[in-house]
Image (cartoon, rainbow, N blue to C red):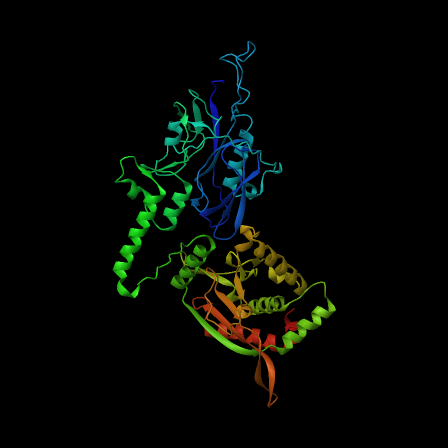
Length: 500
């Protein structure tokens, strides 16, 4: 075996978009011991806005995955460590001598430095290239997972290395500084600071360090995390510091018993389910709580006769079947016209500078319910699009939302939101404003109701429009004027022509 040094590159979780500070690991696409190329997709993460596939800017062998699936990781923290796989050499006379270069060693200053430098430049500049690749394509992963010895010193640093990546007496150099032992799998905070980890090879255990304790299995870690069990606390009373499944299960039972005792007879035999706020659910919770905390909102509503709007939709669909113009596109068209008349609602409040910021552009967000939860894709520059173009863009974004393929930039920058909760069979609501916007229009279901037309009672298609608005940007007169304008356009769509 050659005795050269194994070079490793630590890839940090990149900036995933405006305002995003962390991401949750959904699924690793590679495993320790796999071989990857530059730009290969190595992990799928879920941010507060969308699911994102992350490519790696290095080529080589996967040495360490710094977080398991289900873990929330902050931007700038270590994500994956990639190094060059060492090449075994025979003891033949023509084998390289002690001073010769090992063909299995990657020089970080040559093979990977260009990609690494480019990654750092693009990440600092806010380029989307840290997410969409570097122009080299995605080569298939070579599944060369080999199990074998690993250095205990490397294990102490949280470095999980596949067999063959280290041998007895072989030093391992990892790009990164020392890190707290409490951070599982972390090699270093900043690439470029080499650390030498030396140690004799011993049989590897499927374990990872968490503080001063050693958790045997990822399943045990997940079980403890899902039930809110502190494994470091469990390790305090154990001589060997090893946490096993039975230890976690006993702790869970104790927690449940303590909870039942505190709750008394009202709980009885029924358990209490605790669901962690993660991914989109956590993002929605934080955003709505911030909206309620910061925005002094008010809501106004009106019942409208939507019969004429439905007839107009049918006419357009018959005349232009290829455009698939639906109700959402028509309502978006009406809202855009209303915001041009009442620009106070197309704004936000800069609390730091105590200013109202009015936008010249109209970016309409629309609520879309998906399997991942509620998302709000944004139709940019909606004021420049025809009704047919609005329909096409709404359809495109809806399809991406349903497949979880929306890019982060498609979920930011809205100036007004339209929420058609009528699809859930709901008549009305008091919708919460999508912070930092200033207004949101909700549309209830369209149902047959008795309605007076020209003094005669008849049955019409009726819906309820609800407008929530930020009382800091305007008073009730402006909000009422906008809502009445939208209602008039719904009842008499032809009047919209005057503003087109």
